[in-house]
Length: 136
Image (cartoon, rainbow, N blue to C red; front, top):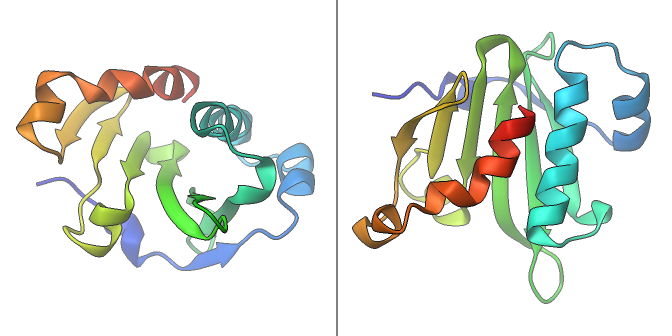
């Protein structure tokens, strides 16, 4: 079973995302900047549709929420990144409200979990996210 303990961490919004990304000295911040850029590029969305959250009382990791849709209010992707634990998980809206497990889960850049249909597994949909994994 895959661990998703980060779901129980305290979540705090980071309202000044750009300032935080430029001024923070937290481990993993350089990768976080690259991840955010890659999510924007992949989803073709402006920065204002990405929201950043700190996880844990001592910033153990980050959550990135990407929104889209007609009014830019629909969650289209959620990313959990815990640099100290080498965790990188991608959630889609269905897994957020349904299964309670990520769509894809990596540990130390190794894909360890897939939570989608056989058809998507057959076409290796996880390869679509290889550019994201490369920057982690």
